[in-house]
Image 1 (tube, rainbow, N blue to C red):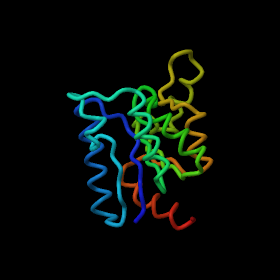
Image 2: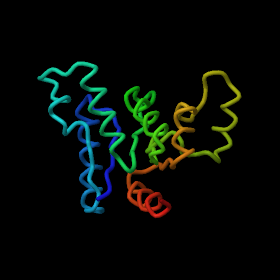
Image 3: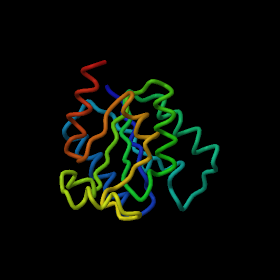
Image 4: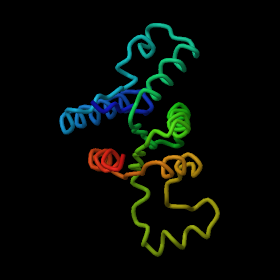
Length: 161
């Protein structure tokens, strides 16, 4: 069974619901995939309970290192710091990573007005993701722009290895 670590922010209803939706879709599409979704780990992520930084770091790092592949959600104003850390751990361990960057502002790359706006300070019409973090993903994986592209990307990476 292939082990996938699902790295994503998990701090509000929207994030929790999205993570669960994607995990459920992947479980349905790929029954041989065992998904470690941190929000399902009550021992450290039940926000009514207590887990200190060492407990969280230890459990999540062990889970990343036990994985065959990492799925990292890159969406948000910035890449979530915990997700960026998990990407770094996976990269250093040689674990392939799929990044999901679904920000709709990346559309219109051929729109001349959007390209021209790049010349004006603070007028970019495009989303930004930290290039170092994205680079770590691309060195040993790939970035996709829609959740429907995740399962095919997993298959592609697993077939390479």
